[in-house]
Amino acid sequence: MILRRGRARAGADPAPPADEPDAGAPAAPALPTPTVGDADADPPHFGEGPADVLLQRLELTVRRRLDGLLQGDHLGLVPGSGSEAGDSRTYHPGDDVRRMDWPVTARTQVPHVRETIADRELETWAVVDLSASLDFGTGLCDKRDLAIAGLAAVSHLTVRGGNRLGAVVTTGERVDRYPAKPGRLAADRLLRAVVATPRAATGRRGDLAAALETLRRPPRRRGLVVVVSDFLGDTDWERPLRGLGARHELLGIEVVDPRELDLPDVGPLTVVDPESGQTLEVPTGDPRFRARFAEAAAEQRQAIAAGLRRAGAGHLQLRTDRDWVMDVVRFVADRRRAGSGGASR
Image (cartoon, rainbow, N blue to C red; front, side, top):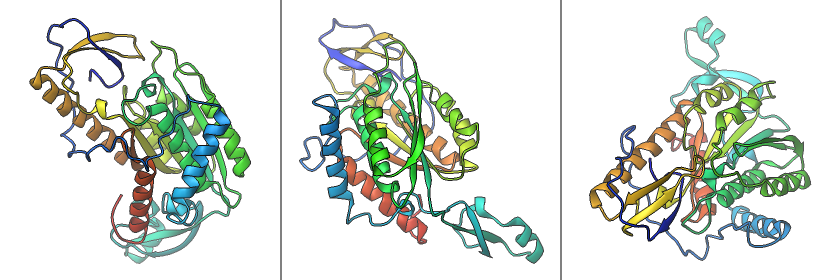
């Protein structure tokens, strides 16, 4: 898809017709109306001052708007299991089939699931994609800053009561691993390190699959794995993610910019793919081209959602043109309802 990874500049000479965007899975439903300029959105911007000051501001935003709305620990983020097996009970529609207790089911001829007891300490690992495609944004912030904000929200919701947080950060050029450590101070140091990660060079492709593989070997104790990415490019991330899902709870945080979903009519436009360096001339004045682009973009997002679903991951979408904190609140509320027998993932 042509504009999925580009910094665009207008005013180029008229271009010949561009190739039709790729097709994929069935089109996704219409997305909500953008809310650019929302005063409550508190968009993150890490390139406009000292990192410590900006992180403190982000932490205040997260605490002010999440505390009171999202009481509790990690079960509010992703309801479900700890790692210790508990008693069996009769299966009910909607139960996680991964918790089926097959020996008891075979013995009683009635489907049973194994209850789980939450660990006293949860280990959360975040895989954060900071490849060149994240250095783009036309909304309230760029995708890289929104990805870091998503990590900050995960940190706030999980680092309590001795829970540990670690991270694997990938740019395509390097993979940095930060050991899981308990406590708010350790989490703050981790966030500062992620903010300080150098931006990826143009022409270097990301490798999310390789970053995910680093968590599979050696196997980690059971816990929560959160993947923060735009999930663009190759889909080879799905296989290692499914492997992690056999042992861990999974959450995918998809970072999206509105211009990756539809194109404005601004005439001839030059777009650059920062991960390949390829330059394309796009005829945005052609309504048929814009319609094909929007259709292909929706199909791509549907394919990403399907891949996360097949891996057994929860799916939270954060957009650069929306109030990202409220998107987190809505997601957690939905997950809580799902955990209590209400709405599904």
